[in-house]
Length: 381
Image 1 (cartoon, rainbow, N blue to C red):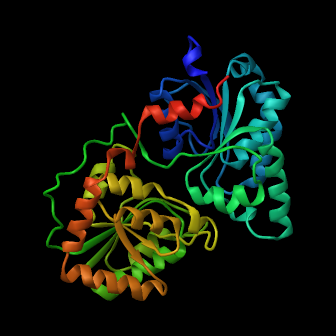
Image 2: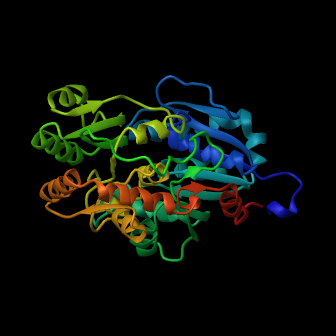
Image 3: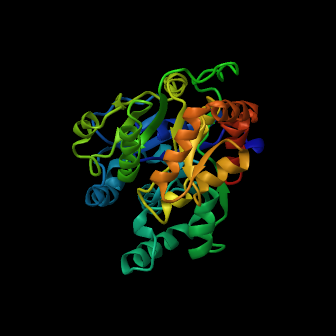
């Protein structure tokens, strides 16, 4: 355990891509908690050397499931030169199901002794429902979970809707929300005196842009409002959903696309640039989209930018419990237009929501090193 050893625990962190902002954030949390960490990951696109000890597993691509299976099969050979370092790991921390499969296989083949931890950030649509493929994949997941010392989820609904439903009592579950990491360079909270400007109302949709319905709802709103509302897009468009993303944005009036941003360095100014943040999602409608808690409610909340979510989702419940944003109903387009019309007439509600966000404790949005230490202390040998 942490308090009983002279050396800090060593974590072998299996992630999908060292260049991913969320992977970097988790690695930062480990390091700021004082752990020794080795990254074990494939990469996507050109490999930029990470800022931590890293074992590269080669290149993979988005949605290339066959390629990931090949990676799992050849991984023992790739990692054989690093076996001593891997055997020194107290914890084998695998992020998402494909990396859990890889870590599970290597743990057995290389006889690694570290406790296996599964971090689940999404419930993939292939795991939901009663079809044959979903039942088969849940059978694989069940086998893997039997070897896990802990399952880490980013939303309580992942436990209640998936793990407690299909695998009750199989592995302990801990909640670790997608908060900012204390010590990272995201800057101070904004000035409470700041008010919405006199120009158009600006709605930001940031991060992983993969929801076709969100794009359609927001672009239609901007077109109907004829310059009184601007939609600001920043992040990573999913090319499987938006193969002609730039052309679609160019054709949409009052919609701006500003490309990728660097988190956490750019967060303060991209949230200061908008009045509201879009936190609705239908990418995996009826399942994961209902259950998740996205990064943007924590980032936006820290920077006092109220979010918009759809009633019935875990995101909306989170906002309502804290009086920290705006909730719309189905039919979404009509409900959103009513909300925006009200805010355009009187932006005092936005000011009030900003003040509420600024009044919430810092730990609502920021994860302290003590939280990560307590989590790893549950499993470290």
